[in-house]
Image (cartoon, rainbow, N blue to C red; front, side, top):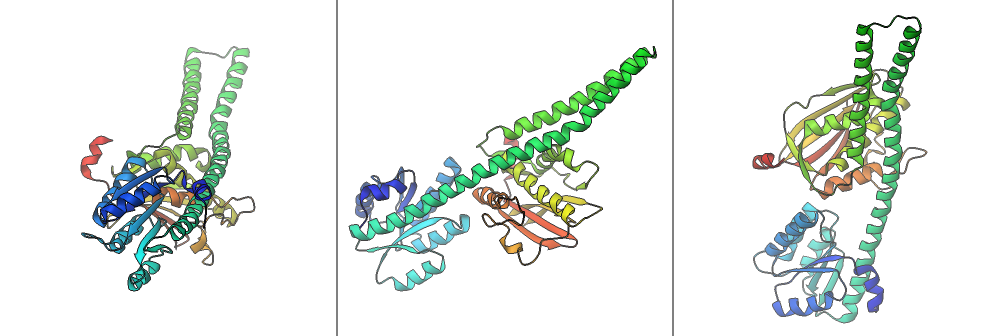
Length: 381
């Protein structure tokens, strides 16, 4: 049996939703759980459990770390509630409290991916063993995800510095050449008022270009945690500004997003997802020596989702690896970390979306599916 401090090491920072219809047991067990966990939210049936689950997500922009639930409850039983929760968050950690005679129900839960059970009547040894195993797994996964995020941030920083260099080379060269020419003409006494006006116009336009890209980069690095409503059109256009130095005169961009369809995202996180997909396409263009490079951006309505499709003609993804590309640490690059697409998947799933990929024609099609937002929300953007 594990000691309190051994469990507390892994449980102290976790949030728990506890669902139990027996009010006496709910109170007694909550008092025990409060010693282990940071936050305890309670509900007395599956219906209220779903409501509390969604409220927690809305208020904290994340899901509860752990759900502990009974099976037999009024209004909505535990199995139905778990099915609905797993549909929303497939990675949700759940402990089920069950009687030994619930074997048929346990089989259903095992098929849902639940492997953590506390059997009734509950005893201290059974509870502490399951809590230790579950909390340790959750804590380790959170640490691993935080490590991945740090890796990704360093990679992002390197990418952005590279982008800035690409963005600024051309306007700086234009400024230098026009200044050199101005000096030469001045020495040769060929300066007129018209020439000065044209010179100033050129310089100011290049400075405006540098300022515009600098502002986008500053926005990109600004820390954000709130979901904001923004049109897909604006989102893609602002991201393409960041990528302009790498794409200009190298890749033909076909942006078919013209309508003001909106979505609700953490904007800079979503920009990073688009950048990551485009970067992968750029590398594939080079590896496969594609001469006429194309990138297509278009929207598609799929049931209750809007899909942002990013399509390239970079040769596609080998079938033997296509099912693995969203896995952590999976990479085909010699210097790659394998965190980009995995983190993209985590970010999208966090806001109830999905990311998919398939080979299409001469290349790959990435689809980012996000739930449609209500028309009345448009006025809030």
